[in-house]
Amino acid sequence: MSKRVVVGLSGGVDSSVAAYLLKEQGYDVTAVFMINWHDKTGLLKADCPWDEDVLFAELVAKKIGIPFHVVDLSEKYRSRVVEYMFAEYEKGRTPNPDVLCNREIKFDEFFAACEPFNPDFIATGHYCKKDEIQTEHGIMYRLLAGDDPGKEQSYFLCQLSQEQLKKTLFPIGHLRKSELRDIARKAKLPSAEKKDSQGICFVGKVSLPDFLQQQLKSKEGDIIEIPENFPGYQNKTDENQSLEDFSGKYEYTASDGEMVGKHIGAHYYTIGQRKGLNVGGKAKPLFIIATDTQKNIIYVGQGQDHPGLFRKGLFIPKTDLHWIRPDLEMISGDEKDFMVRIRYRQPLQEARLYCRNNGMYIIFRESQRGITPGQFAAWYSKGELIGSGVID
Image 1 (tube, rainbow, N blue to C red):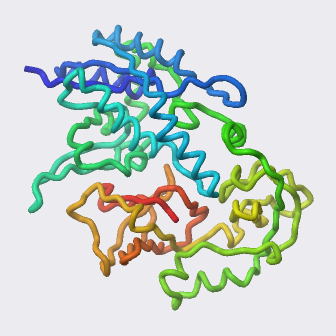
Image 2 (image 1 turned 45 degrees about the vertical axis):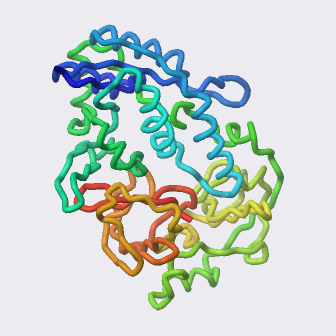
Image 3 (image 1 turned 180 degrees about the horizontal axis):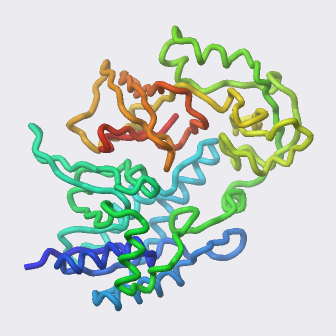
């Protein structure tokens, strides 16, 4: 008897080919489309609304010859992803909605919504791979990087659990995007030439300040420019500093620089941002190097090589640590080298992890640009994603 698989069919080419390949491999495939967002009015402008996607998804399912269903998870998405985003931005942190969507919706609420179909597996169109190994702790499922370095998406799944991985299939992880497009064309799938979606997961490409203004009020504040010779930068490069000092955030006050302009609210901005400052007359472009939502100040520095944009380390509180491989979890006092990524598509970086009672310190071999509180750091070993955590 064929194994039953539910495919999360988004209407895009990736999930379309995933469904097609599974059908070709002899699985009993059912397609389910998720509605996760309804708001298309006012300030929110989605570039790919779901009512267009669902038509593509239904056409793909019909072409492949598999049953097609729709589930509405919009209330769960708003409460578990969007409300979390608003809360994080209000605190001056920058969350990753795609990681949150995978953890909270695609691999949790969607799994639950698919129970009536009694699937053996749930499949997605992510560019990553899975296998299983026998360990002294029993069978462990490994989350592995996809074969296309330009599309590799394991980072977005850095918060998955063993139970979720056990039930998941990633049919396209061995393919490159060009190969996948060729398969879609040869199979004459309706989504073969459909452009990839961009922007916030399930919402679309939006102006972030416009999106946040739905709930977070604008509030004028000062833009303070910090000079390159700010004394605090010296301490962060001193190898004799403690882990706490070495990995800590730069701390600024308004008296450390000069006021060069006004902004519309510190919670609308993020570290490394260049656009939206509206401050001219500088020799080099201004980049945001820190935000203070309590005092409603944003701090900027001139040039993309300003020292305020770079740090050697970061800290993850113990409560924000997650191990995909619990059998490899570090305990307090452990130190180990990993390859680490702090944003999607960033090349893996050499780093040493220091596990302590209060959490994890990650010290990089080379200083990293734009380490951002609220984002996820994920660590790998030989192409396998081992664990992750939210940057403090």
